[in-house]
Image 1 (cartoon, rainbow over the protein chains, first blue to last red):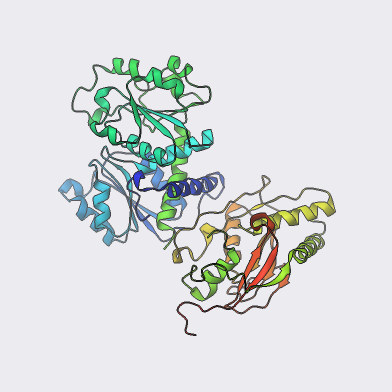
Image 2 (cartoon, each protein chain N blue to C red):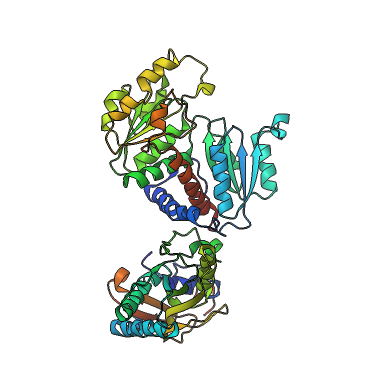
Length: 302
Length: 214
């Protein structure tokens, strides 16, 4: 493993190695000295062409906990606004000695292209509507921590699958690890190519809910929508939103996940968002551990 | 393979920068000589347990930390012996040193071992680090760094089952099961019943090093 571009590239053993490493590294967050010397002298560049708080901060914290130097680069206020291309920006950063580039870009496939141009390890932190591998790894890590297993786990991924990179990464990773995934969305928000994905599809949330161990809600990505995909927010919320009444019909030990940012009242009601069976904040905590694990595994060895 | 003992890996990774830890193929157990058998290991551990009690005047504040993988069962055995003599529990745990190694960049990223510090922590305690083989001393150096990030022990001591010499750092053990003079090209393999099914310390034959003439 030289880059982390897609969860589809991870074998079962590699994925489990990331999860096991993250489980050990999670302890570092509980110590008084929250730092390991492992990546001392290495440089990690956060190259972000899209807005992000959670992912960028999480990567920055993970790299710093491993003693790497971190350079944050956001497209706003940089040479990108003067017309510099992704390739030239990346080569500039490489010339400055970056060992690794964490990239978020609004174009699907940007991370793959970048991996061809630079020598260092490329970590995909979200490319368009394609993939977001570390999010899927932290989601799976959270499932394993909460429910103790992954094999045979029934996971429903609900909402705007069409515009979601989280959904695709999760489907591929969960399939590799033996879980059964059902995508639940209005027909207009299901990708055309979904029959090639290793999962099933349903348009009826109420039928899937009682059979699920995990319900993962996705944000409706209004900023990527240039068409009318559903009549109104209220109607979407009524058919696909998780409210207290639907929450009560879930299995007693089933958990609710959300990659954030949440839109309360749309895909999730405030009551459900604040439930102890909702793992949103745990997911953020686990995100740091998982990203430390990935950075260690990609940069720690020869 | 994971089953390969750390002692052997250390001898290859640390010994004069030999780059290929897989060069030897399956362990040459047929020609390896047993230098400590099961009962001898038991007796050495019993003696070390008593030495710890003697040196620490009853061992009130002793915490045993094993270095994975084979230091951990050794720490557990020592703790049980001390408990048998003194009749009170001895805090014990494990301390993984992988993230503190000085040779991380010489090999692909390694899987981490478990770190499991007893709930009372190490602050103000007398920590006895436990490992199977003392060789270059680099593992102990890494363990001291790892310990430093967890807390501030009153003192740190080192218990080792086999000291095979060839130190590369100013490190010595406080408690030694057996001093074993070796050549740099020999391999020392510790087998313990917990991971391996039986107890033994084997001295493997000298073998040609890749990249070295003769």
